[in-house]
Length: 320
Image (cartoon, rainbow, N blue to C red; front, top):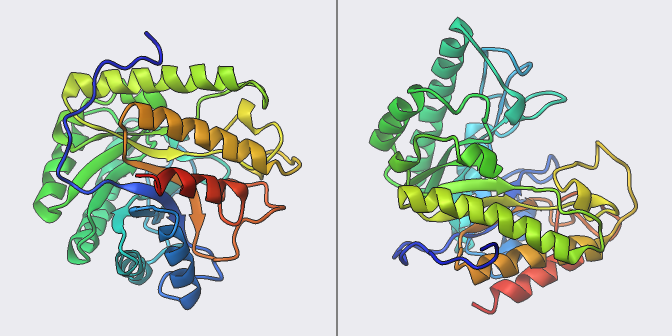
């Protein structure tokens, strides 16, 4: 029955990982005083973790050439992990692939190009595993929303190699229940992790939101139950913009809209309520910026800082 979960993974002795995807702002790089201020404010919400997001890059969705890029170089990944841990938070290293004018889920490389893509990706991920190990990050994400490339035996081989380099917890972030149901390598990881942006409906249709959220969580929990792993919610989020409930994944660059701080706070509260009912503790909201002045009353993007959503999330997390 939707909304009436009958299963939960046995309690873990590992620390709860609730917090935010932490994105480096150009004017507040990791290691700066501005980033330190922002991260301490992140911790003040009751968060226990932050996911640092290095950006890999490829020129287009069918390219077999993928590189680390210079958006968040190695020295700043290290600085970010150190600042997160200094604030008393667990550090998650969560790479994303940046594709101009597209997104990681659009990547689809076939034939011999697929072999070259996997070889290049393997090299980068092993480098990130070494950084995460040396800096004692608690979690490394194998990949994020690579739904066109998350099949085949190469992933099992990569997981074994990463395990030899990194002693912390390891997961992969599937794009919603659709991809989670197709991933074959969950048994080799520590959790079933997903990003969840299902269409919710009209901005005032809270019962529709509830049904959409519960249906998506039912499907993800079914996957996790089948492989006997806990569920981690690696991304939930929504813009603080009118009309955002219909397409929660839509960015500010895709559609201009008036600010709606109430909508963002209400949707995120609905998510947190559903997760609490299911005893899903590990959740990283999209997103928080290293710029302490990020977000604000007139911002219409996903950032929750300096908005109603920041205080609402704090109210939820400081309760437990």
